[in-house]
Length: 107
Image 1: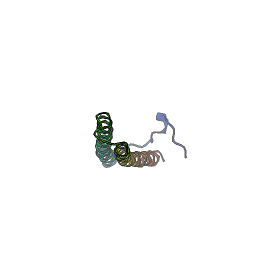
Image 2: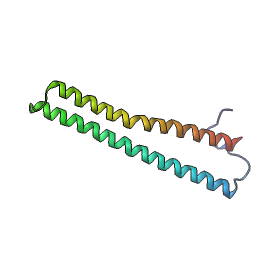
Image 3: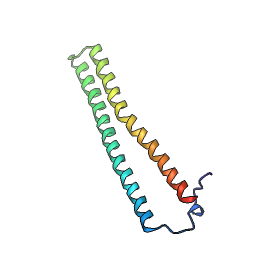
Image 4: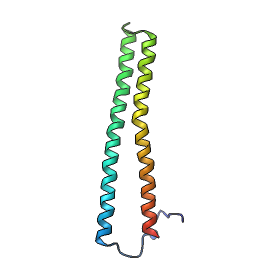
C-alpha cells in the first residue's frame, strides 16, 4: 500500500491517550538518537578540518614532508567517514521507522 502525502490518509478513528503517548515517546527517542549522531558527525567534521589545516600549515612552513601530509589527509578522511556512516545509518533507520509507523496508523 502506497502512502499518500495528504491528510486524507489520516485514520478515521481517534487515537487513544496511550497511543498518543507512545508516539510522542518514539519521537523523543528518535530526536535523542539524532542528536547523538549529529554530535558525532559534528566532531568528525571538526577533526577533519583540523587535520587539513594542520597539514597545510605544516607543509607551507616546511614542518612536515609530503608523506606526512598524505597521512594527515588520509586520517582526516577516515575521521570524516567515521562520523558520516553512523549518521547515515540512523537517518535510514529513522526513515524506515517513520514509514512503518505511518503505515500502521493508516491501515
